[in-house]
Structure formats: structure tokens, C-alpha cells
Image (cartoon, rainbow, N blue to C red; front, top):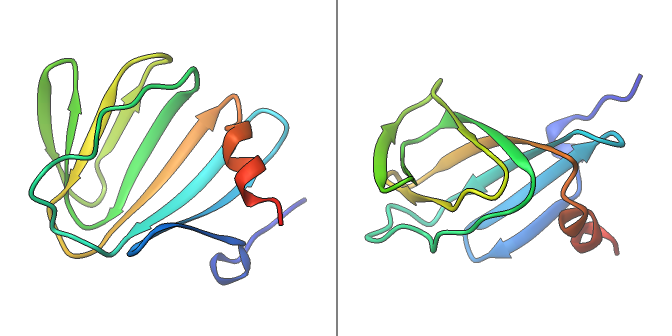
Length: 115
């Protein structure tokens, strides 16, 4: 059994006010993303990846964009992203915490986490 305490997980600083922590098995990854630089006037640029993604909004509010539509999401809401589908979020509150799950694991995130 492997367990992680939030405060003990390695931190990756993405930009000022944005960081992530990750844990994974061989085929499944969980990523906790904290955004403290909102609200934002514009969404992040859309991006896509081969990984399937499930995201849980733990704190704060975001607009989620996919397939030409936007959805206002609050704590407790979930969004799902199929492989290869462009998507983006816009932070609506000063703090947002997302819990993202990916399969297969994001090898690019693992590489960036190596010291």
C-alpha cells in the first residue's frame, strides 16, 4: 500500500500562483492542482493530450470549455475529457483546487517532477 499526505507530495511550480502535486501507479495518475492567481479574465489556452482525464473541482469555481461550449463548475462538480479532445478552464475565484486523474499516466509530468 502506498499513501501520500498532501503536504509531503513533491510540489511542481507551474507559474506564479500555480502548482501541482502528483502520485501515480504504472497506469493511473492523480494530480492535485492549486491555482491562486485568479480570477482570470480569459481562459487558459486550449490544449489536448492523448490521456483520458477526469477532474474534480475541490475548491473554487471555473468555467470549463470543450466542444464550443462552456460550463460553470463549482466544488463537487466533475468534468471528463476524452483522449485528444481540446479543452480549457478559466479560473473564476481567487483560489481553485482541482483533482485530476489521468490514464495512462502523464509521463511528461513525471519527467518534470524529477530533480
